[in-house]
Length: 285
Length: 285
Image 1 (cartoon, each protein chain N blue to C red):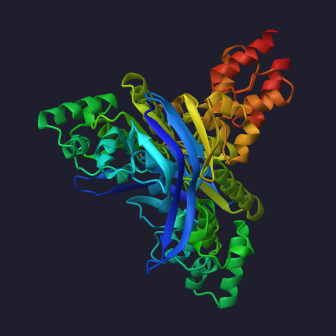
Image 2 (cartoon, each protein chain N blue to C red):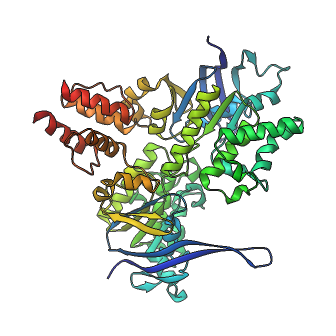
């Protein structure tokens, strides 16, 4: 059953309107997101990705157009914008910059406490959130600043999860992490998606991360949404992606090069595992 | 004479509390020996916390050894009288472009370095022009840096270092905040400088695909160099690389997986072309 969760209807955003710094940051953006989707949002630096996601939880208000959450118009005067912020959790880049408490537990507890929940409920959610991101009990009383980069990041994400969002938007969650740290955090996010069916939107510059984890890719270029399809279909258009300063995962280039040399392979694959199988099959054909 | 010589280097970060008493000591570099020849392009990779940035900061004397010695062009970095000469010889480019650009006009930012070195005025402008040309940013000379993309800003930062006519440039994760095309621009710029201006390059990065064209690669863990060799040698040792929390380019991983199934594929495949050639040989045999 499809449940339309987020709908953008011809959204435009212009900042600095009327000044010499005027910038048309979002141009006629329309799309629909169903509950439980796992989406990647890619685009060159300055293409409008961060601006777009800040419209999803009402941090920025569209200049024109409509946005619906669970069927309700968020710009309606009776709409509870505050509740939208706890339903759509936004994790900004370098989330560890928002850590401030003296212990991991207290930092994650801050959100639910401020939602006005009673102590028992707030504590329950704190434990739940920390478990979801794989932070063990041995770290609860440790200062967040003693943790590794990847751990800090997971604590920051737990702080958002403790608000029980229905949608989790992560802006470059792997920025600055080493390869193993990247894998750990993305695996954790993928796990979260599988177990709680939370809708996930991943903003990233890594084409490999997109290919390995998401089902649908939205591509931005200069403020416009230029592609919005399932992962394979987007990367099949790799030449168009290159023209807008992006790329496809290396695997895509390998498969296309092999096809040009006469190998009978499906160029639709986007991960190493798929490529391996296709190549073995292709050698036998 | 080596461009850079490091002998028995050790470095400790000492954390003090408010009273000035030592709270903790962290031995970030624990015995490093390194030689870099003039004109080399070397890469240093390693997990977060392995000591890469700490090592890099010794090369232009931002940090001084706790133990051991670092020489840049024969000059001991611990001697204060050598500081200006060392900083003129070895320049550093950091991760965040916004933290390195200080002027409101591109050409003025590039001219800042030579101006502070006391270079005569006409020569400053000549150097500004040559440096911007070398990084492909001359047409943006009168623009405001805040209108540039991340990749463009990093290239301006590199031009600012080039204008000081260094013999060596150290880049600490210069592409971490850039999109794929920005990354390509910056990496191809530094290769160009290495080849055509004979600038010694030391590149610290988490992106394995940026390392494949280096002359030599050093892998760090826990403040020590644990692997060293050409990119091909290093990337042939995949299980070991993964042990150090690192990764290999997708094409290298794919070749390794195919080899594991019994196919006769050489070790250390680094590029799409090499894999295609290896597979063609198999197909035709």
